[in-house]
Length: 136
Image 1 (tube, rainbow, N blue to C red):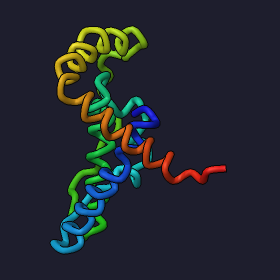
Image 2: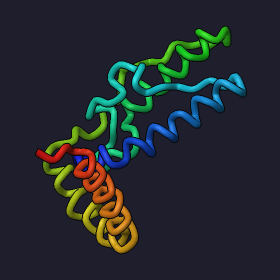
Image 3: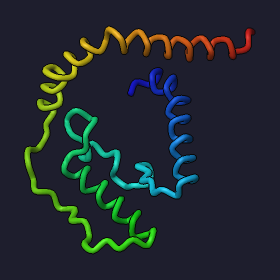
Image 4: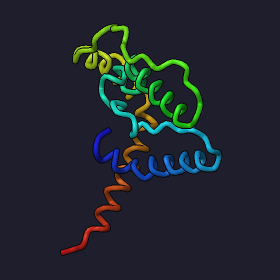
């Protein structure tokens, strides 16, 4: 995510994470934290759209869940096999092709409602920062 948008959305993401942490604590639910999983944010763990896990990403998540269950005393009968079946190797051309054929059309469709909202969030963050700066 671009820096200004990431900074502007950080408080909302933090609120969401806090709410999830509260539910987990109150209910005793198991929750897999991607920050705790080595390789969870590697490019190879995600499909070309950067929204869905790749085969490797699914295996990384399955391994993380297996470890979480085992640590909670739940038997996991078989270890997760981390070897991938192969499949198509993604190149820069795949990423560019996805962006042109899928990403940009999605952005245009969603831009009518998403971009004005994102602009408001970024501008609020920017003006909030400007108001906090001391005048010299």
